[in-house]
Amino acid sequence: MGDKWVGLILVALADGARRYSELHRTITGVSQKMPARTLRSLGRSLLPVMAAIKPWAETNIEQVVAHREHYDSR
Image (cartoon, rainbow, N blue to C red):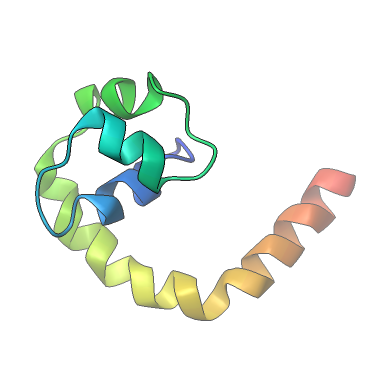
């Protein structure tokens, strides 16, 4: 769950299966190898958890980014 691509990849797969090349085009900044590597480390059992977290994350993204930048600046 700590990998920065996990959430983005799981959300992209929420509507169904996609080819690795589709994930690469859908997710800005992801390398071609990361979707495969990330999916190997996960199970589909995380999808309901991520779907529950997504609305919170969308609502609070500005705060999360601000806190991350503050933390990184230390």
